[in-house]
Amino acid sequence: MSSASATAPSGRRWSITPFLTLGLPILVLVAFVVLPLVLIGVYSVYSLSPDTGLMQADFTWANYERALTNPIYRNVFLRTLEIAGLSTIIALLLAYPVGYYIGAVANPKHQGILLLMILIPFWTSFIVRTYAWIGVLQSNGFLDSTIGWIPGLQTSLLYTRFAVIIGFVHVFLPIMILPIYASARNLDKRYVEAAYDLGATPFRAFLRVVLPLTMPGIIAGIVLFFIPTFGAFVTPQLLGGTSDVMMGNVIADQFGQAFNWPFGAALSIVMTVIVIVAMTFFFRYADVEEIYGR
Amino acid sequence: MAAEATRPSSGGSPLLRIYAGLVYVFLFAPILVVVLTSFNPEGRATIPNGLTTQWYARLLDDGQILDALWTSLQIAIVTALTASTLGLLAAYGLSRYRFPGRGAVQGLFYLPMLVPGVVSGVAFIIWFNRIGLETGFLTILIAHVIFALPFTLTIILTSFAGFDTRLEEAAQDLGATPWRTFWRITFPIVLPGVLGGALIAFTLSFDEFVLTFFVAGGGVQTLPIVIYNRIRYLLSPEINAIATIVMGFSIGLLLLGQLASAIKGRREKASES
Image (cartoon, rainbow over all chains, first blue to last red):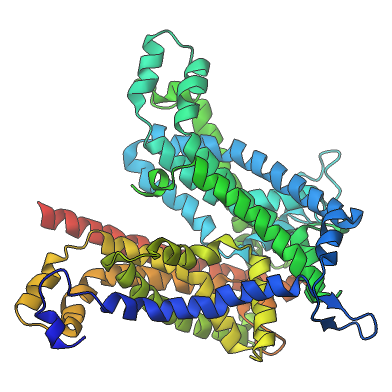
């Protein structure tokens, strides 16, 4: 930082400053990200004292054993996978044509506004967007009072699995559209034209040319959608019934009602490992630079 | 069907257009229902028989919501300042130096993005409990800064990416100290990124729910927490009014950010030609 360093030969000027500047942010992240995560790992092998019910230092795999083998938690885990997976498939069916339309079909002059229209709902309060579905789906709600006369639609759809899935799709759809849009925009249309010139039908050209070329965007979209859905807590809490409890809710309960921190910690580790495996898959098969670099 | 649309002559298949249009309707319809309900005299989501501003008027008497709004604004402002300062420091270090373990440091900065929200919340609460930090304003602030930092850093890093370091070298060759070089040359150039990073941190903090739910404790309540509690335990029609205001505010901030980057882009184009 002294003026002496300023007159040093070029290339050695920044020798100390980068460490000074990186030091503080690294310290903050170690103190409030790394150490808390390590502590979850430590607590996950602790046990509850049978006498007092309080957490005690221990080394046991019992919490993991319970998390992975107890049928109750196995069912919660499978249900979480099912709800998150189903939501992801439905979201992809909605997101792909839209991302493709904005990136490869729409007039380039309109691309900016079309993208902005995707970002606006995304930047609208998450809790409010979830709440909006309560008003739409509840009995005497918006759907009920407008199209409730259609047979079979009179009953409230709120507090059903349908409500949870529609909530997920609505809340996280924009983060799936964005990478698909990015890969559709980078699509070289000459390949598609070449397929036509060689006599391919539109369906075949889509399947053999467009789909493979936009695959990085599809994979990125799936992973970015699946991760927050898999770890969700608010949406099932507000829109789902008692039979739609997901992993996130069970974990939260261990720190509230059930008050079993070691078990909650073990469940958290299991969930984090699943998410990190999914992310690794993402970085292996989707070129991130390709999607966000340009 | 979709592939055909890429033919320059077709201009987009009508089916694809209609489909995309319907997805936009799906994205906006529930939001519009909330806005509509906020003016509905009945106070619930139906086709309104008239218009009223009574729910907005009621907000002014709702101490809990007003307090929570004030708390959320304070936390969001301090989060924006802290996250953009830390983000600027980190971006400077990361973009100016190649050192062993740089990849690991970069990974560390993005780690909070990879951990599911519930797990982060759990990690914070056991850690604050362990180190004896009482839950409240400070713990919410820490959680929000950690949550926002990867996003803020990403934005600030992009403004360092196209930086011509010869400008700094020139300043130093002319005798400027590193400190002076930073404030007179570097900072003004990366300022748009820093402001963008602060804006995103503000928005993320103002809207954050899951982490706050875990680390808030009983005493301090942010606006999303109050909204959540009202939704769960009693339906109050004012929620639609405050939700409409909050959405208008977030959309305003987003448009502001877009406008700023559009102006910046136009200026850069102008200076290039």
